[in-house]
Image 1 (tube, one colour):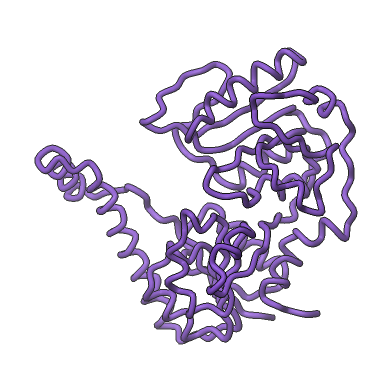
Image 2 (cartoon, rainbow, N blue to C red):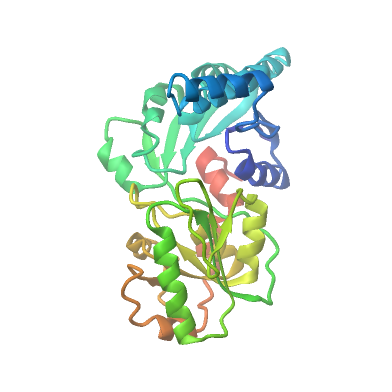
Length: 330
């Protein structure tokens, strides 16, 4: 049974990684094994923030306090780990650029092999390059990053899906979950109106996480005041016929939506044309649009879902994906 030290700051998504490591026979130690308390301040910290905001006119000090709390938790977790004197076959890190350097150095010292996976483009996570020598391999999900940084130890690999039970009866026609950034509200509102023109009876569930900078209100879009869990997101995908994917401007890598769709047999509507380069692309299943021109959308919706060959889908299943990353052979 391979032993894995797993380090990922996003405890929401990390839950699925940990679950499927265990389901596939790995002995996994999850470094961040408790919820990271974002912006949960003590009374003194709240007073400190008020002072900086009102007296020093520093509206960003709240992030300084939050980071300080994160470092405190991290050091507690590192202390717990060091006391156990463990050794691991592998250390698998996701978004190592978000992990304090002292943790990465200690993980390197107790792991035979150390792997990082960047599931965001290096345009927003380039700090990982500072840690290049600590890792046996750094994987990136945007192939362009490998070309842009040829002197670093980078390899491209896609995201994966976590094999979960597939609900045959789908009750939602179209769904979207995401943060309300850039012009997503306007794009989705116009898309909603387009779908309703095609068929007024469509059940549409568009969920955007709201924040103070986007005070929109609409009876068409569900504005969330807090994030939903990744498990809840998967449940919504399972109930949906078509998933909506909106690409970030910073990179061309494929989001988790594409891989959830492989598991749940969803169609996808996306503005990421790079998906045409992947072996699971099929025009029956994936519609590419700029969310302005919807020519051919109605015809796409009425096309039957094209079932993918098992030898294709297995490549993206966590079970085989992690073996490929860790270079484990049966």
